[in-house]
Amino acid sequence: MRKSLWCWTGWFLLLLLLDFTLPFVYLKHIPTVKGSFLFWLIWIIVAIISMFIMFLRWRDDES
Amino acid sequence: MDTITSWTALLIYVAIGIAVAVFARKRMGAGMNEFFLANRQLGGFIAAMTYAATTYSAFMMVGLAGLTYKLGIGAFGFELTYLCGLVLVVFFGPRFWLVGRKFDYLTHAQLLADRYDNRAVGITATVLCLIFLIPYAAIQLMGIGYLLAGLTKGSIPIVTAMAVATFLAIIWSNIAGLRSVAWTDALQAVIMLATSVIILFVVVHKGFGGFSGFFNRMNQDIPQLLAGPGLFKFQVYLGLTLPWLFFSLSNPQVTQRLFVPKSVVAFKQMIAGFLIFGLIYTVVSVLWGFSARLLVPDLSSPDLATPALLGLAVIPRVLVLIVMVGILSAAISTIDSILLSLASMCTRDLLKNGFKADLPEESELRIGKYIIPVLAAVFFIFAYWAQGKKGLAFMIAPLSAAASAGLLMAVPAIIGAFFWRRATAAGALSSMIAGAALVLLLQFTGSNPLGIWPGVWGFMVCTALFVGVSFITRAPETKARIFLDYLDEALPRHRFL
Image (cartoon, rainbow over all chains, first blue to last red; front, side):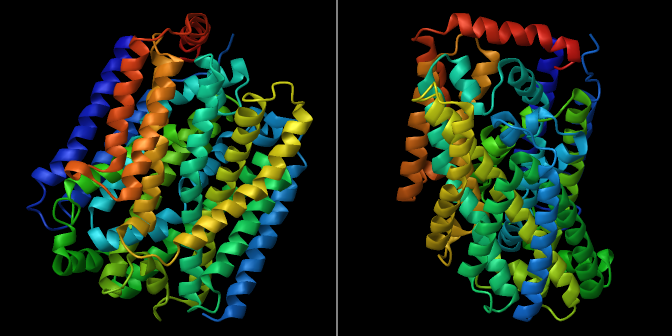
């Protein structure tokens, strides 16, 4: 359980790093909707899917 | 749009809202948990909609649209960073939910006071929320004021619109507490989302001939707003985004909703519903801001982008009315949730746990209900002072971020409560007080030392103090053991992380 927690923490920290760096460094030369707009749209969909994977396994306490 | 039509639409909206609130009252029992938490028995759909309506406010279709209008695509990243930050609900939400049920917590301040075994921690957390949520609630009133005044070309004055919104928030929160708020939120969330999607499609079709034409116009006319982060400088982006990232943990009106789902299934539905709602609403609000930039450029104030766009002749008047109601819904649903949360904190954390432990629950509840209109009046006074002031600091989006910057100072203590046995009350107190004082000082003096915004400075200082002071002071070992051992045992039973 702890290992899983650290893995997910690392994954989301990576996503945040991309959020703060990619648009400022690599996407500033793409002045169209195919640049940062498309990046952030794909980025959040990946983040949302990740969260779904995390919480869909939850269960009510059957005991 | 004429005054009579506007008022008619408002009255219909009010009547439907009151009917829903009264319907919700039929299920209401007695006591503080019932009034402020719906007895922790909200179903998944209602929980999702009240979470969405509480979170997303006038900020979106007025403030975020205005920020997009002025600074471009970085506004999209800024708001989506908040949505990504909802992973904090996936990590912490189950913890809040479990300990809320086990130890009967009403507020996050009560949780902190109990976990750190120190009443002053709860009192400090509550005062922090009062100081920084007042501007945030006032912003909602300002958004309503700008919108209605803009749409009616001043025939409904800003102050009148703000007064009506304040009155409605008081009524809906008082009728049946969280039950009436949650049910009216559900209605308002549906209105918010549906109206915003419909109006965007209408504007894109009538203004640009479709999405292809819309995106082509964006690429041709405003490339500077699309490249990289648009016109956002990194320090501005960081300064706005950092408090937003922790919004789901730092704002009591949303953390309180972590106590209310009736089951794990309802909790999952709440998160799933909110994520989907949030994605759609964010995309719509930002595209709305861009369409305003293309169709009504050169506005004196970016927060007028939405009323200006709605004032265009191409948009059917009936749709304008519906959108007006949608934005009003967004703002009032946030205000009444803030009212309820702050009222519960004032009575439970300041009055009862702070100074009068033997206060009967009946008296506690009565006082809580009396505090609601008092708080609402304070929101109104702040909004009255702030409205009409110019500059980035008084735009809706930066002012919202400034409020959240102050609330951010409780986050290290919250995280420490759940993950660090060594965390101490002194660490929590020093971090919240020093962090908040620094944020206030920097905000009032308009200082951004080294170009770094107040919230970032405050967060660095409060985190360092929390860790440092905890290391040199005594931890509440017994309480920490009870609290954390319970979570260690309960989390795996539900397959929580």
